Amino acid sequence: MSSYVVTDPATGEIVETFPEATDGQIESALQAAASAATSWGRSTAPAERASLLRAVAELHRERRDELARIIVTEMGKPFADSAAEVDFSADIYTYYAQHGEALLADEPVNLGPDAEGTAVVKRAPLGPLLGIMPWNFPYYQVARFAAPNLMIGNTIVLKHAPQCPSSAAAIQKIYDDVGFPSGCYVNVYATNEQAAAMIADPRITGVSLTGSERAGAAVAEVAGRNLKKVVLELGGSDPFILLSTGDLDAVVDAAVAARLDNTGQSCNAAKRFIVIDELYDEFLERFTAKMLAAGSDDLAPLSSVAAASRLAAQIRQAVDAGAQFVAAGERHGAFFPPGVLTGVTADSDAYLQEFFGPVAMVFRVGSEKEAISVANDTPYGLGSYVFTTDREQAYRVADRIDAGMVYINGVSLDQAETPFGGVKRSGFGRELGRYGMDEFVNKKLVRSLI
Image (cartoon, rainbow, N blue to C red; front, side):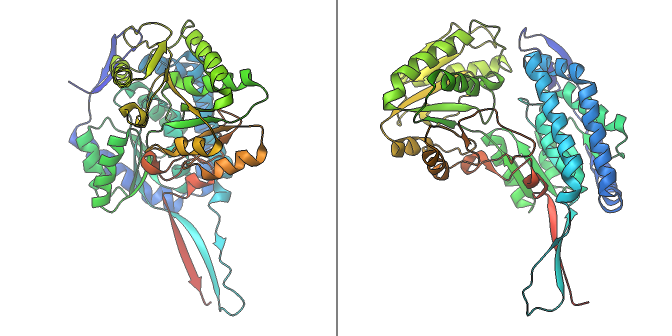
């Protein structure tokens, strides 16, 4: 049976099944991407690439409701959030259409007064790339990988999550309908084994994966053996540090929003709430009340029953190790009520785990130094949040947090212009902004005495 199946997490109903790619179809995809890379990357002007990306953005906006409805069914995201994801994806394509040509401009090198001749760094495409994308943001994840790389002149072979074949097909149709040359963007319903073979194939010049730590390690291993460039965006257990505030209710609202983003299924959602002693009791009371109240609303299901079962098992382990857990109710299928864990100690497995769902861990700390220590005491290093009324303290703490991103006194601040990525076991490389143009590109030095 094919692994590419649309199963509505709200009902458990199998909606549609898509056949997995044959080895012949994989070969055709690789041939098409390799063939297109020569003309697309070498012969197409940046302005022409930008025009096509702008058209992709326009079709995302034009088909917004249709695209949103697809992922409501595929992975359970509420319609309003799904539509917002489509909008953000369109913004990313627009950003690279507007700024890509400037970001690709030649960069003169200052050789000093005694050097002869000139030197310039020119940015050139690498060729066909493989993208392996996850289910939690089916359009956004593709946009932030595909948009900059198509602007560079690379071509894309895209393996989406088996849970998202309908959205994968919808994205392919957008590229086809705007008139992208054949082979520039090719969707494949590949198996994991076929993906590994594609990474090893000499026609693929690099691979980008967003997904689990386990998947990232597997991809990096194959890529390393074959000397391929890799970008990995993996899990996170992002700290939310509260050191002082003049408006605790606003901070609590921000904390709840940061934890419940995408029903808690966001890699860079706040997951560990680290609160200074004098604010801890009041924060915990208000935060718990708001988290549990969210469970009385129309909370969306998790992506699958299996995801809910994994989260339930993690909570049981934490409680068995001495933690206290309060929740808004009982789990039903893929529907998981929001909850709060306290008393998680450093010797508990839960202390080092990522909780991918609407469950928060809250920690009490006695000082700024201890807050930083707890924040960094994790194998992950994706995002982080710092709330304080002291500007100097905010930047001091930001400098000491081991993470790829730090957000001060705000949440949901991601933009097309700002880089996204992590350190430690959260992966490496950056997407979005100017840095998204610098991963899969040949920064070619041209040194001349003419």
